[in-house]
Length: 308
Length: 310
Image 1 (cartoon, each protein chain N blue to C red):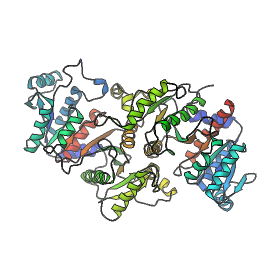
Image 2 (cartoon, rainbow over the protein chains, first blue to last red):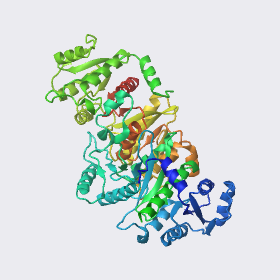
Image 3 (cartoon, helix red, strand yellow):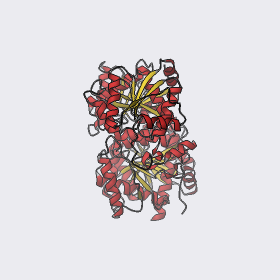
Image 4 (cartoon, rainbow over the protein chains, first blue to last red):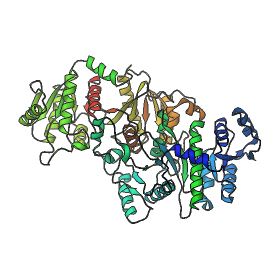
């Protein structure tokens, strides 16, 4: 299988493969509906809309989305919506799920159940996949959504969950940079200690095929970067595939810093460790960003099926 | 109001030339060569940068070190040495202390770290005979975002600041923003979520800072907690139900801790190609820290910032 390196390839898969049944949890939102409409028209998904039927109908009008033939599950209670969605995924009535206008904590509570975890998985994490100009591979930032201050064991789980998705995408040995702000004025941070321990854990085979970088930061990694600056362009091919952040604040801020810039291909936000794709677009994302997220989810759902 | 790096350089050039003292000890005497590949923190790059700043009319350099060696070095770099004052001193710590003394005596206006070890340099600054203003240091990084200067703090000094330290960090950033002519500084107190969540301490700190600004305890508009999308875009903020003045217009991003700030600043440089500079805040006279991954341009800017803050 060829390595999937960018959103163009992701869209090709989503266009080529059969539509995936996708639940939309708390779907009564115009921006969400606009995205679902486009994804359906392009043959990516067959939506199952969960939420308050009145709100869904109103939002669909705003998006000019004809609901004929679209399954709607009427439900008002956010937690029940999330449970209903995960149940459908477990039963095999939906291949993937997307968060609509729902506080994410409800979804996590529903998703975390054992029956929905991939074999061996104890913890979930949120992974954000980026495509950046001049980098010829996907990069991912994690954890941006679940574990507030992950301890060492949790970090190991987060890496494993993320590496598994890179394996699916056709990267046999993704590189991982466990970020740390260790620096000359203070080299003794917990993140620096964990960074070293993670390398040992990898050598001991406690995490699947990947390379844990011998570096704390991008400046460490690009040692010798001066040559590139002098030449006027930095060679980014050494950019790691996976950035493991020391805490949730760092993960979330880094994962969404694209909002500052124009021209970045919008990232996909997805939960790691789940049996089937769960997409959690940020509520700040608009439909142009969310459609990338859906296409990415469809590609992953397809790759997961192929693997099974 | 200064909107970009060019404005900073031009404003500094309009000021009177300042005397800048820098320890200039060859730390790599015993090793084979300076680690040039690690960036621009080698003596050659730093001396060249200092001379660039001198030629631009920003400063008059005063170098403290072994006189003969420095002269030879300047000659080998084809830099005219007669304009440069050199003060003889052989040891690193003594050179730093001598430089600090010159600031105290009014013989120099600003101090540059040069290639002395950052840790030792900072402890000399923090010493009771050092250059502290209020017993608190913080670092502000700077980059150009669309049509304005964006301040990031604390990107270097404080690891996990508590609320009282965050107040001090905010105040230092306000002081710098005022240097740029910003009247009412807008600060986004960043976190991972825009709701207060007791399990995420940064959301609580951000909310308190926000309330303090509302009550006039901090002389700025602080909005928080904001996640980065709400802080960066009015539309994103609106979708989250936040109707405030700070989204998309923030002058300062106040970070929850060093892990987020340091990685953010490095992402901007390496992955988003941003030009960055920065400045140490909290000293009585400007101190140029020329940290880690600065380029010659960012170092000249840091010197210009120092000149503006004299």
